[in-house]
Amino acid sequence: MKIVVFGSTGTIGEHVLEQGLDQGHQVFAFCRDKNKVSVSNHPRLKIVEGDVMNPLNVERATTGMDAVVIVLGSGKSRKSVVRSEGTKNIIAAMQQNDVNRLICQSTLGTYESNGNLNFFWKRIMFGWYLKQIFLDHELQEKYVKNSGLNWTIVRPSAFIDGAKTENYLHGFGAEEKSLKLKISRADVADFILKQVSSSTYLHQTPGISY
Image (cartoon, rainbow, N blue to C red; front, side, top):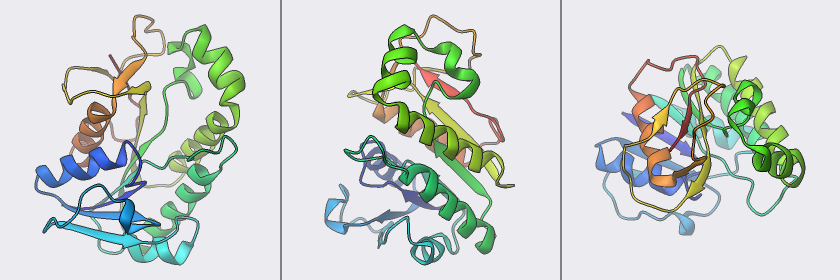
């Protein structure tokens, strides 16, 4: 499949690139700086430089794709709106180019999944320290849910380093309290790529955690 990855130079994005290529996909890495792409000289990788905040750049990058993966990050800013505004541009481009499959990475804790969080994540991290980033994730999800596309929103718990295990919980209810609230970036990428060719979580918001 032809997949474009927005956020390809981030800590999740680099795993999506590597695993996607290993699985035989043709992967398009959308980024602002091609020198930051972790994978190079792969025959099925194409690097597309551009700014996700530029609708024309995004429109060109989505042309002819089978699926779109959004793993946008906020960088060092705790007030960034790149997730919501970038996602809005991506959705508009997909609609224009008749590309329907969208996998968007959000975060565990948004909307009904807030029930999965403990006090630290609910009140301190998302309630105060990362509040603006959290609210931007919720706005991002709102745009995706109202897009009319074939979307899946993936809600991972806190990222950690580690290998791909494929041994994680997913699709649990908001009442699930036994989660470790952490998951490796490699496993997040694994789950995201599994959704590209699956309809199991079509129009759903599965959480993912150990």
